[in-house]
Image 1 (cartoon, rainbow, N blue to C red):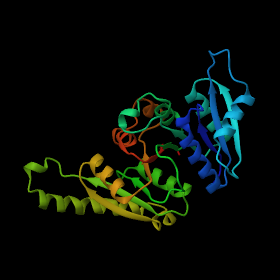
Image 2 (image 1 turned 60 degrees about the horizontal axis):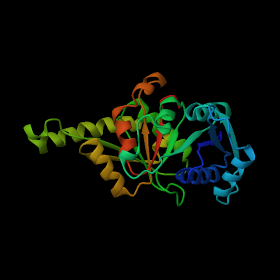
Image 3 (image 1 turned 90 degrees about the vertical axis):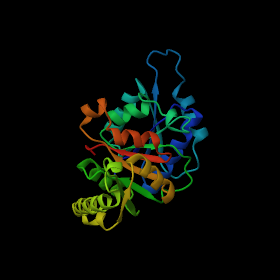
Image 4 (image 1 turned 120 degrees about the vertical axis):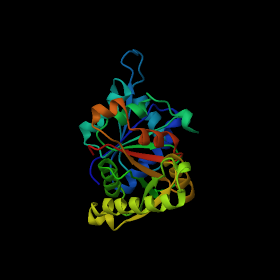
Length: 270
């Protein structure tokens, strides 16, 4: 693992779970954890650096990881991505405030904006961390961005098995002989799945399991995540940064909002 872990925080209690996850990753990877706080440029009465460091110390768990605080004036999205770029960060970690269901995740939030702007993986923390990630699911549509996301996850979590999942369904199923059509589609999808896996690096290929599931992609994925006990899902985004500023990609965007577990979002530039 190279490069520090950058975590954005506003020092609210809701940010603690993301900080705790960043610390766990710092310990696991032996990486520096850089805590980034954006100062409002329009606010004249800013707390001194010493006060912000005191706040950070009050919420830090006991850790051997090296933790540093960076305070910088500007919009949170720009400050977080600038610090990540300047320090050569390996990953950005962010939390979702009050995450209970998809209605709590609002388009246009700092999380959404950082994902659109960043050229490195963004880990969106939704659950309070208890331990290192144990079961990692990588969603794939067989396109290049999902392969990039899978390879990046393999690099970040070098000793974990990866469950690669693809969901498929039969178009206009009610109008067709569903069982026969479904069987033919499964065979066709499995062939493409095998071709996708064959293009992975040998060291990644040795660590994955293939899981072809039937159903609407959102419903099937949510069911798979629940039944598998996964604690991290990996998704890739389509398009360059300019396109991602306009649209994240409908499947990636929906999964980010709907999945109840931590989500690693990997851009194709990673």
